[in-house]
Length: 148
Image 1 (cartoon, rainbow, N blue to C red):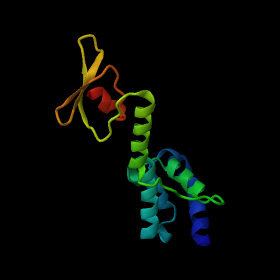
Image 2 (image 1 turned 90 degrees about the horizontal axis):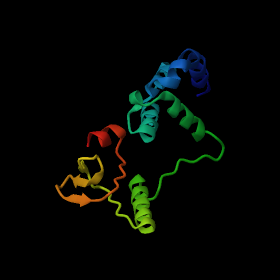
Image 3 (image 1 turned 120 degrees about the vertical axis):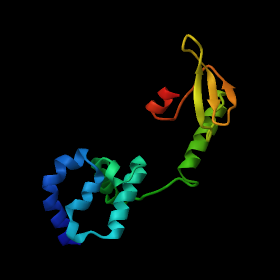
C-alpha cells in the first residue's frame, strides 16, 4: 500500500489544481496501476454521499477533504438511525410543534400559487389538492422553486 500512496502523491502534483475544481473521478487517475473495484466504488460512494452525484459530477476537493477527515485519529463514519429521511421527519415535526405551522414532507408541489401582485396564496400539490397559506418554504433547488 505504501508504494501506491507514494506513487499517487507524486502524480498528484500535476493534478492538484484541476482536482480542487474538477470532478472527483480524477482521483482514479492518480494511481492507475493500483486501481481496484473496491476503491473505485468507495470514492464513488463518498462522492454520492456528499453531493448526490457520482464521482464524475462531484468536485474533487470535497471528496479529498472527506477522505482526509476519515483518516484522522478516532474518526468514525456515522449515519442517523433511520437514515437521512429520519432527520427530515424529526426536523419537520419539531418546526411544526414549535411554530404552529404545517410542515409537509413527501408532498411534491406542482405549483406555487400567487395572486396578481405576486403574493403567495398557497401551493397546488402533486395530487391536485390545494393548500392555502401566506408563506411557502421550499426545500427544492432555486431553479425548481422559481419555475414552480
